[in-house]
Image 1 (tube, rainbow, N blue to C red):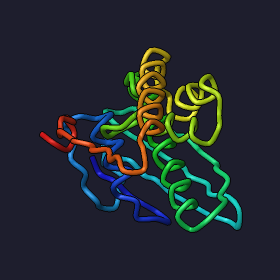
Image 2: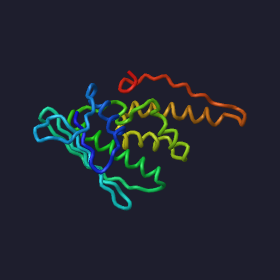
Image 3: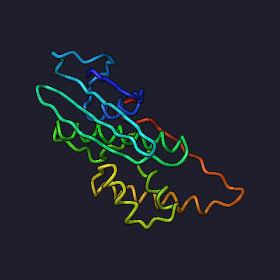
Image 4: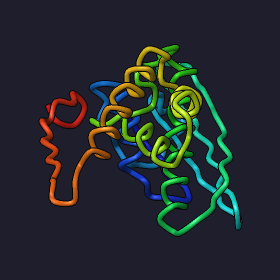
Length: 181
């Protein structure tokens, strides 16, 4: 799929969405020609306290478009994450409109879907709010959001039981079909 990025160069974010929602598609970074029929254009504009993302997709004669406006706040690192989330969300929503498919893990990619829940619980949010975050902001199915809440709660409990001289070891085994094949 041809990808055209305007106002940003967040290739990784867009590629994750592409690999997740359009398996087998390879990203090609090039301007879109009038006769192209398989493309995505993601534009980002920013003002002082918000970013505005527009995702346009065309595939097999069908088109979809979504706009996501997201507030920007905090450190430069925080703002970068907020921009990436807006780009990923706009791409995901347009792709879902185009294909009619919503993966069970929504727009989440990677191997730690419980991370967002764990962070929310650590900030003091109640479990139902942490779960609702996954469903609302990341389009995760209720069953998968419940699973992420269960594992995130267990991870947080295990972390809280560590003593000052204890260590925790995370062993990651690559299994994702999009990048680790």
